[in-house]
Length: 161
Ligand code: THU
Image (cartoon, rainbow, N blue to C red):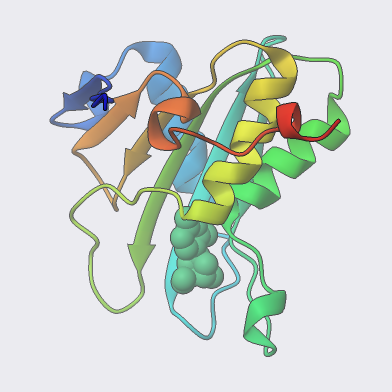
């Protein structure tokens, strides 16, 4: 029998302003994307912004639907759009910001399991890490160095022969 401990590094920035400039600009893009969320059912607004290696920023916000499961999270709207626009470009980082129309979300919102899986697909494909920053309506911001950190033991294409 063997036991393994899986751990990863998480950096906390007390405010958005404490982030390095590149990260700060990405988070600003997520915040402004959040404002265009279509969330009439949950009133929960999420914005995501993906930084490409070519410097382009691709944004997304959650898009809900009267048939609830037909809606999509901000992270997947952003990451799929990035994959569609720049299929040969590396994704460097993704920033996420969430708040509610009913209350100010005070702690960082982590991506749901489906979004982790979707981001992981691109990380595995490009073979370089996609850093991830999470924030509520405003700081603090949590940053991890790779989506693999948030999705250990991921199911990947290595199983599909
Ligand atoms: N949502 C996201 O956009 N990202 C997440 O990671 C979690 C949840 C959205 C989906 C839905 O529109 C609303 O937040 C409430 O679940």
